[in-house]
Length: 252
Image (cartoon, rainbow, N blue to C red; front, side, top):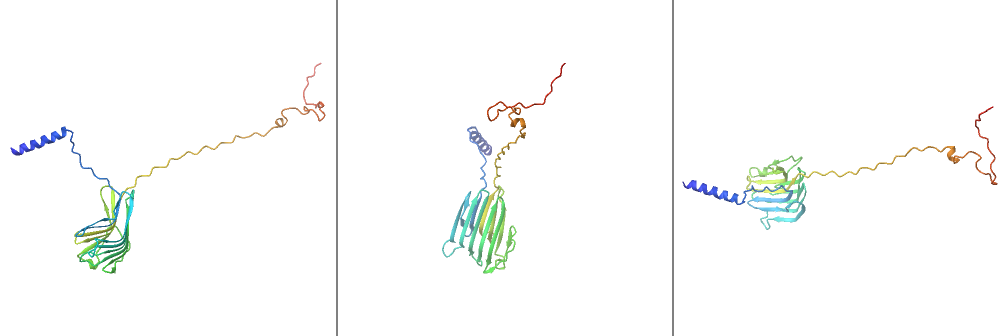
């Protein structure tokens, strides 16, 4: 009986809210954004995404230790991020990762770029425990586990993700310690599809004037249409008549 009363009360409250103009709309879904950051970490040590750019703009950090002090997890020379509509790019140079219980991981340069949903990365001078890791063509989601990291951590290069909201993300280098206990991402870029370009209006070319055919002047035009001998001579005397061919009818 109590359950029926509770259900009836709930239905009554809902009816009153609807009748009073209170609508229960579904939560708005945020539109995907172009974004980029050069460093982010979560787990035992959390590092806020830096430098983090969304929408449009550029940002950078130079000679950074995060977190600060003797227990820094990341040391880097330069972090860069740049974003515009349909495009994002992030990079980090001279990076050193000091994860607890792991040999040092160093990288000379990492770059992630996302342009109109096309993604790519570059990784140069990757070292684990002071030993260089040979890299050729880096296919999407290339996972490497050097001997020094066996059973402890793995590194994923050119990590590509379809976010399911119309955007895609690529991370140049991602380190996963003990199945997610600690993660570090270097150079991550997220982009959306670029809007279609509107065609430029075309201006019709003016029609070229056409020249009408000209008729060469005749002798009559040159003489003004008058017969020979019609003009007075130099002394002003009447000109001598000039016989003209003709036809006279003969009668008799």
